[in-house]
Length: 192
Image 1 (cartoon, one colour):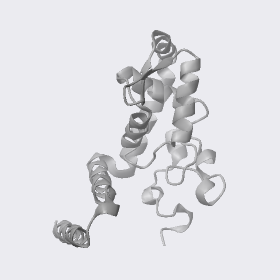
Image 2 (tube, rainbow, N blue to C red):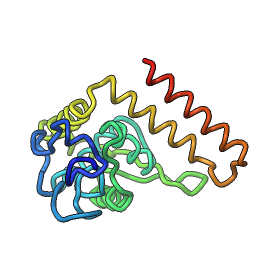
Image 3 (cartoon, rainbow, N blue to C red):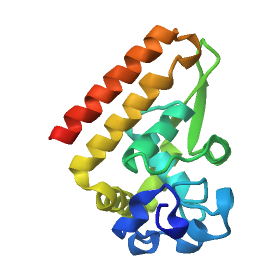
Image 4 (cartoon, one colour):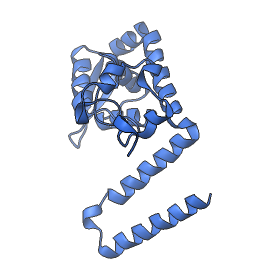
């Protein structure tokens, strides 16, 4: 049991309520199950239209692939929220259509997105709102774990990726070794 409707996403038990950080609580908690929303089950994290500002700011930092944008947003939320490709890629297309971003095809067929001069102008025109959005993101992530625990959470994610990266090609001996490593790590952590 995880405390009622919170499910396995334990952050809400620590008082990290979305409405306390300027996010739309209705988009977090609307409905039930997978459509409930929030950072744990795929609902809308940002107010209508705010994701485009987040993506543009990230593109202003450096050109990125779509999956890099998803990963960067996830990292900034301390791993507690990851936008779906079904929201990021249509937003990138919209930004291209508006002339705020452009996609460059690479040799491997992937696209790398970069901000345009028009996109930079649009960012400058909306700077106070964008600063507010990024401030709320940072406050949200810091309130969930505090900075030291965010690093621990990132460590958990890295372990998970390493364990499951090539799970189908692991031998029974390799799986046994992974289990032993994880059990040793758990014992060492408990001793801290």
